[in-house]
Image 1: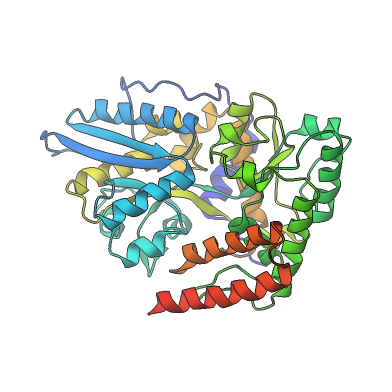
Image 2: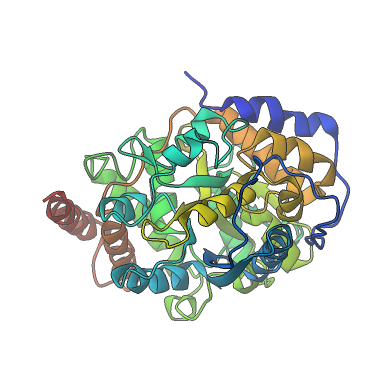
Length: 443
C-alpha cells in the first residue's frame, strides 16, 4: 500500500539517524540577535511605526520559556514591534479563545488545532494564508506540499503547521522493568497493555493518568480501517467497535490501572503535572512532540513507542502538532503574517525551538537544527520518520460539529466509568447524539 511519508521527511528526517546524535542541552538556549541569519524573505520597506501584536499559544512552562526567547529575538530584529504573549494549558487555552472569538477579540496570531479549523474558518474568523504564501510574505519554498495541505479547509490554508508529529506512548523503562513487565514495542498490543498494567499496579504504580478518548479511540478505529470522523460526520458504521474499545477501557479503569476521575479532574493539562512525569505511572498516551517536554520535566530517561495494536501501521498517521493562524480582523495583519513567517522559517528562532512543537515543516530549518539536537530531540525526529514510513492513510480534517461530538464522546466514556451506562447503551446514544449534532451543524 502507499506510504504517506512526505518528501521532506524522507530526505531530511531519515538523515537524522545517519548524521548521529546532535550535541547541546535539552533546555532552550538564549536567543542572541547578533549575526542572526534567517531563511525568511527580506522585510525591506517595512514601516517603523510602532505595532503591538497579541500572540497566543497552549503548552507547559518549558514551551513558554523558549517561546518568550523567540519573541525577544523577533523584537530585536523588529524594534518597532511589541508582542504581547498569552498562553495556557490546552483546555484552558480553548476556554479562553471561545469568548474572545465571540466578542471579535481574537489574538492577532494564535495556535490552531486541526480539530477547530473548520469551526473558525466557517465563521470567517481566520485569514486565508494562501495569498500571503503566493506573494512570498510567508516563504513556502522549503515546505513540502503535503504539509502545506495540512491546514487546508475547503481548499484554503487557514493555518500553517509549526511541526508534524504522531501519536505515541511515552514510558518509563526503569519503572516498567522494576515492575517485572515487558517494555512497549513497535509490535505490542492491547493485551500487552493489560499485562504491563497489572504488573505496575502490583508494584504500587498506575498504568497512566488517562487515555485520550478522541485521539486513541480514533487510532483504534483506524486499525480497523475506519476513522472517528469523515468529511460528512461519523466515520464508522459498526457500533461493535465502540463496544469493544470501551469495554476494554472500562476494565482498565475498574481494575485501578488509571487515575480516578475525581483526581483527573484536578489535573492541569501540562507535562509537569502528568502522572508518568511525576513518577506515579509507567506511561503517558500522548503525541510524539511532547516526548521532549516530558523528558525535561521528568529529569530521567524516558522512551517512546507507538500506540498498541494489532495493525499499528493502519492506525498511525502524521498530523500537524499545532499550526499558526491569523485573525481575519487583525488590525496589523501584514505584521502578523511576518511574525508567522518568522516562526516557520527563521533559522535562529528555530534553533531555540529545536522542534519542540513537532518536526519543523521547512527542510532548511530541519537541516539547520540537526547539529543542535539533543538525544531526546533526535528520538522524536526518528520516531516521526518511522511513523511516516508505516502510515497507510491520512487522517481526515474534522468536520464542523466535531468538537461538540468529541465532548459527547468524553461524556459517554465518563458515564461508562461511573457505571451509569454500559458500553452497549453508550454506543447507541453516542451515535444518535453525534448524528443530531452533525445534522444541526450542516444547516
